Image 1 (cartoon, protein in one colour):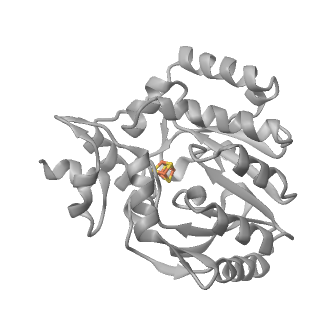
Image 2 (cartoon, rainbow, N blue to C red):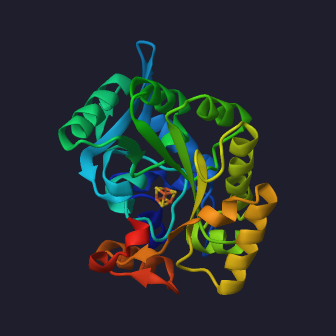
Image 3 (tube, protein in one colour):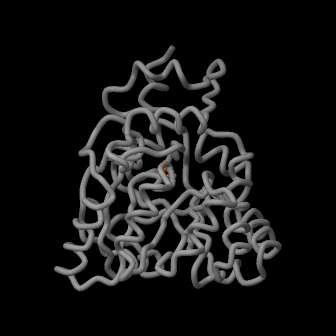
Length: 282
Ligand code: SF4
């Protein structure tokens, strides 16, 4: 088996775990269910009635006009333009174990110091461990909590839990405009793209207001105009407001992202330089 594939899947000390991923010949098929199992095994633990996750760092960030951010370890996808692949999302055994209370305290400290009204968990998939996320959200009920998620793990129960929290704003980050683009970007089956769309549907059905409590973000850096129209149509079928509030994302050409895309054979149609990120993306 080629080491090239090992590096695509894990960064750090986890090359031995590659056997647990479904690779068919030279075609890389990344299995989100297997990745979920691995993250749950190595980066999530229950202790003393609390669910702990590994975190790599905490920071004040410029996005959303200023937000306190915790970078969590582990994701169930392996996007080929993921800015966090070296630091958090592709990792399993890095970082510090933290309880929801410890995470909330650190985020609150940053928010207070910087005068932010918003907090988030980024760098990986927060819904890998819903109980942990929901507890952090509850402990920070005085802040707007932006749940940045790929949406593939949202079922009806989780949608209801999120909808029940007044401080929740959920941002489903669609990986491409169609199932085919999703496959190209993530290396995972296109069926998961439909899970992303279904997450939006479940959240709206659970009472979250489109473009206010829940909105679609979309990585359109690899999308044709025709496919963007298809996405708008698919979103309109969920709710007519959703196409009006797509949070458009283009690839940011950080050197490590360029390196990763090269490894994955990805060439963006639309990209921005790190020093030229347009205001609408911030
Ligand atoms: S879903 Fe987000 S965090 Fe996970 S690999 Fe993709 S871009 Fe990175």
